[in-house]
Length: 286
Image (cartoon, rainbow, N blue to C red; front, side, top):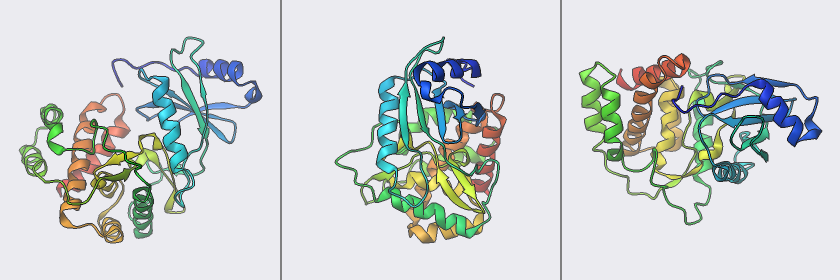
């Protein structure tokens, strides 16, 4: 999927786990989540998940992700992963890697309850729980989504060259001019897409990939409204959060920015991700 992607073979995972954590020798290892774009994910036994970055990643990044997971764990009624340990490079794999607890449930890419209003309210409750975390003086990191929309003009110019629809260009020109809301930035998950959401019985069961937890535009987590929900549940999500028009439109802008890139970047290398982006664009433009 990426020019600098690192191959992670199951045999390498087996060797690393056995050598560095002998207590887990003999536990079955199975690759899961083959459509992930950041990590190769392997289930280790019934209770653990090993995550191997696909692109060059410093150990400090994994440590920061583990700290974010600890900060969120237990602070919401929905399950989130608990960090267990960080492994070292070896057996041809050149970076550190991490182990988290395994969470039950099915990812929303495989079981989609997007037509359920109860599910929409669940997602809103999760966003409320995350926003309630104390920023502890932290501010937006200054990169990625969640700052100023106009900072993404160069990226969007690249994306627009891959889309043959004049209406998309006009849509970005309108969305990019939305001002920041009057309220402060809040804690956000930062990537509420189907592959990071677990469902069970048509309800939200858990949220994955919490390492991006941080301070940003509170509208950032509103991307869930278009990535995960149909019209009625989307309205239930909005009502639960009490979004005003400006915040809602900025959420639309962040969803648009993300979907525009996902559609073309993963078209050949990760078709399910590309289709997810296209579905989001269809929801945003109809």
